[in-house]
Length: 191
Ligand code: ATP
Image: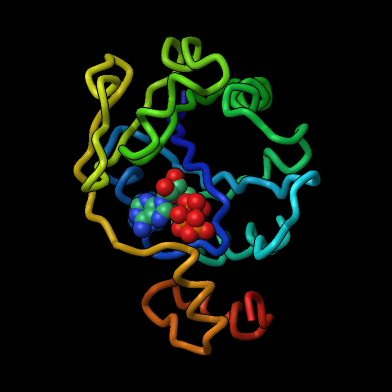
């Protein structure tokens, strides 16, 4: 079974903060692969500044380039919206029976997990890799046997900051991978 970690996000756009975590999990845990799962637009919500699904996935794929073990996933694009993690995991299990999936999340998200759909099944059946986010308490789930805490290097950066920089005509060099910066420049996304 190939151990595959799932890192969910809107990646609007993907930035080096995301890639640092993805590569940390790939190279410093027992995971064989890490997939960046792009969350689709919800048709019932106003898209606002959320770029189109395929454009965000394209940027993720540009960020990954030829890095072995990293992959972008569109698995949620055609699923009913909103997609719940437990449902996405069921679809992935069916589609990839030779893989063992686990979740990757920030310590800020861990305390919210008990409110997720079927969180008891999630915690029973899946490993969860949690990276520290300073200033957030990981809560009591931090000691759950399925949870592993990681002290990964962090970049204080958000997609919101990238979008605001582009809107204001400011440089995003070094904040997103070069190939992503080039594509953002050419496409005029987030202008
Ligand atoms: P936005 O600013 O648009 O809310 P974001 O940068 O937080 O976006 P998401 O696509 O929501 O990006 O992030 C995907 C996942 O990565 C989320 O779980 C989020 O908490 C986490 N994440 C976001 N930025 C960082 C960062 N700099 N370091 C580590 N994890 C991050």
